[in-house]
Image (cartoon, rainbow, N blue to C red):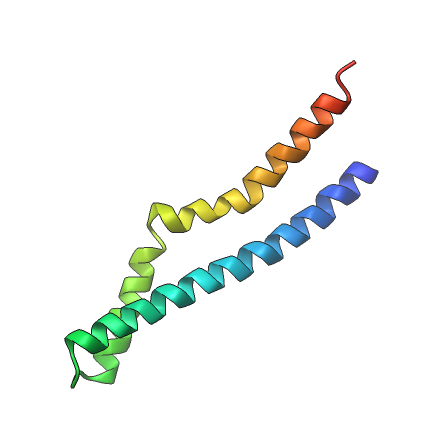
Length: 90
């Protein structure tokens, strides 16, 4: 029962961390794309700017750097599993 409770609390905590980090990374990417677009198109249309930035963020979400955020779930799970195996290896 304690293992299930640990799993549930850990999953909730890691989900909060994942959502926070993913939001932060997307906002940094969005700001960078907005600055680049503003530098390239000083008198550009706001609708075009928004569409270009949204497309850039969508493209960023398909990169390996963004997908590596799943390590937020994987690394703690591997660590806890290895601790359980090492401690119970009798």
